[in-house]
Structures are given as structure tokens and as C-alpha cells.
Image (cartoon, rainbow, N blue to C red; front, side):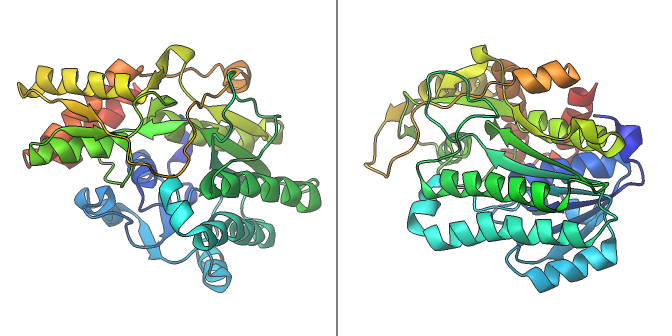
Length: 348
């Protein structure tokens, strides 16, 4: 990621109050960008966005991505040059409980943001962030079938189809570059979401309990949150300067970092004891929940071939940074300084 490029750039990020959005906003603020965020209030309590006072360095707008009129007003006021769309209902289990809200947010939210991009020629670069969604034995490629099983994954497939339709219908002859990015399972310090393995580990440690693992044999492409965040910004810059870089990209770890959940928790327990001296254990306890993908992996050869991109931190290094941040948080240390230090180390 080129920090100098982003100095002074007008960036609009949807979903900025979430886990991934918080890390992106912090990075852009440190780079000197003029950041506007559009999202609902922080989706978790506690919230990384609020704990690290990220709103102090940016223009944070509370709004619903389903509210097209409000979104149009924000675009008219901000006149963004680059738009990163991350607002979503991001949880598989929540999508089973609230499928209508999931589709409204993930599909019509994408329609609304693209409509605003279409009406504002100030936008030169747009990146729509989606997800991995197919249970295949090989790495999922950008040109393969879109058809997620659960409402969350399926709605993200729909979001990609909406983006493709808008691109072909309205942006072929425009100066606006359009890209979709599909990322693997992001992990890192400051994630407090429900039904995610690393937050479950931290909550168990905080309470002095065993970690409950619902499906230790599921395989996921785990990566530190800064991997996709910096990749999105790398692509946004590249296509801003030359539309030939627009397209569809997967952003995930190397194959050696596609771990089972059980192995990932083993690594967490080992690293937690190493850094804190406290022993942690976990238990396999399937709770009979709805279907969740058992095997997910991405083929990232295109982004590697196009940009020479490669992951910075492997899973072991990622876990070291997760435990470092989480231990600092639980001990009421300076998590802002910890976050900034990790960003600087990653970008070096």
C-alpha cells in the first residue's frame, strides 16, 4: 500500500465501524487521508472503533446502507474520489435468523452504493468487498460459479452479480474503475463479534473458561485483517491510476495457512501461554447449529500475478499479534499505541 498516494485523498468507506473497517480507517488516518465513514453504530459491544477513538480522526456518519436518500446526500457533500464498500450483515448464523435483513443490506445496499457512484463522477475508484462462498476441494477462482449456500454467502454472491451488471450497464465508457474483492477469514486484535473463533477464544480467556469450538475440523483461509485491508487499498490506487487494473480479485493466505479451526485454537492456546504464562484449553462441542461451510479456500494467483502481491504475515505471526493486542486490551494497556505499532510494523 502506497501511503503517500492516500495523503489528502477523499475516501468514503461503508461499514467503517466494524472490525475490518476500523483497521482500514486507522491505517488511512495514519496515511493522512480525508476519510468519511458511512455505517450504523458499532455492531459490537465492546467496539474496536470506539475503544481506539477512531472517529476522532475522520468524518463518521451514522447511516443505514439501505437508505438511498441519505447516502446520496453524503456523497454530494463529501465528493469522494475513492469508495470502499464493506457495509454488510457479515455473520452466517445471523443470516439464518434474519434472512430478509441480510439480503436487504448485502444486495440492496450494494445497489444503493453503486447508484451513488453512478451519479457522482468524482468517484474514480470503487472496490466492493465480498467473501469466499463455495465448498470446493480446490482454491476458488474469480471466474467460477457464484452460489453461496447460506443466506449470507448467497447474498454476497448476489452483491457481486449486481456489481457486474452495473459495470457493464453504466461504467464501460466512464472514468470510474470498478473492482470486487473476495477475502478469506480475517482475524486480528479487536474483533468482538459473536460466532467467530478468535473472539470466542478471547471471551473464554477473560472469563477463565474453556474455549468452546463448534466445528474443529472445518478448514478456513485465515489471514490477519491487515492483509485484505492493504490489498483493497493497493487495488484501489492501481485502478485509480489505470483502469486496466480493475476486475475481480481474491485476497487470501498461502495454502499452508488454510488451517482447521481446531489447529488454529491449538495455536492460540500455545501463543497465549507463551506471552502471558496462562494455560488455556478448549473443548469440542458441536451445538447443532445450521449448515456452515466445512471447507473454504481461495485461489489468489491472479492478484499475485497482476501486482506481485503476497501475504506479509503467516498464521503464526498473525496469532502472535492477536495475542499481543488482546493481552494489552485485557490488561487495560494502551491499545491505540499497540494498534498503530502493528500497522507500522506490517507496512514496513
